[in-house]
Image 1 (cartoon, rainbow, N blue to C red):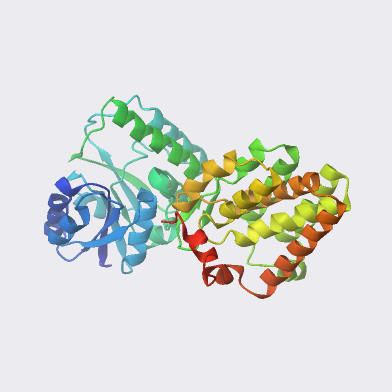
Image 2 (cartoon, one colour; image 1 turned 90 degrees about the horizontal axis):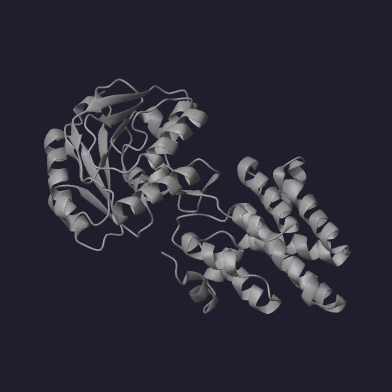
Length: 402
C-alpha cells in the first residue's frame, strides 16, 4: 500500500458540487494527486476543481470512460482511486480492502429505476467474467497497479465499470466488493433518470462487444458491423471479414506485410473481399472494384469521420445509400465509437458494388485504375499526412471533429 495514489474524478456540469468533493478528497488523502477530467462541461466545473486543489483536464465531451482514460494517461504510476463527482462519504476502506479491484457497494439504495440496467450489467459480468456483483455500475473503485494495467484504457461511456470488472476477472485478479455508507445525487423515476439509465444500458452492451483503440488511445466500441446488417448479404459478408480483422489482427499493415505474414486476417480479407465481389457481380471488374474500394475506405479510417466523409461524397455520385453513414458519423466524429475494419471495408465494398451498377465497362476500368493508384500511394506514403497538409481537403477532414 506504499505505492503513490492518484484519484480520478470524471465530471460534467458539476460546478455546484465538485469543489466540495475535491476538498474532501484532498483532506482525506493529502499526499494523493486529484485529477478531475472535465468531460465537456458547459459550466465552470474545471475552474471550481482547480480552486479546490485538483488538476483539471479540460476535454471535449465524449463520455465518462473516455474522460477517465485521458485522466489515467495523465496520472503518475501507482494505485488509482476512482470517484464520482457528486459523492459524499468515506472511501478509505476501498484502499484497505486488499483486492486488486475493490468496488464500493452502497449500504443504502437511494433513488434509481426498475433495476433493468443494473440487472443486465450483473448478467454480463457473470457470463463474461464469472463474477457475481451486487453493484456492477458503481463508480467508486480502487485499482492496484496490476488492475490499472489490465483495465485501462477503459471502455467508453457508462460501460467503463462493467468492462473494467470483466477485464480484471479475465486477468485473474482479485476482485472484491465492500459495503460502504456513501451518498450521491439520486436519479429518480422521471424522464431524465430513465434517459440516464438507458444510456448506461446501451454503453454496457457496447462495452461487452468488440472494442478498438483509436489514434488517441481511447478504447471505443466498434459499431461498423451495423453497415453489414443494413446493406444486404454481400456487404454483410464483407463486414464479417472486416470484423475478423478487428478481433484477431496482428501487427501487419499493408498488402506486402500481410502477404509476407501468410495466414493473417489481412490475407483473408485480401482474398475474401474480391471473392465476395466476384460472386455478387459475376464480373472480374466487380471483384476488383469491390476489393479495391473496400481497401481504400479502410486506408482512410485513421482519424474520426474521415472514412465516413469520403463515403458520403462518393455515395452522392454513385447513388449509394447514405442513411447508416449519416447515423454513424456523429459518433465517429466525437470519438464515441469507431467504424473499425468491419465498417470501413463494408462501406467501401458497398461503393464498389454500386460502381458496377453505375459505370460502363470502360468507366469501371478507369475507376479500377484510380483505386489501384491510391492503393500503391498508400503503401508508400501516408494518405492521412497528405490530407492534413492539403488546403481545402484538410478543412473538410477536420470539419465536425471534436
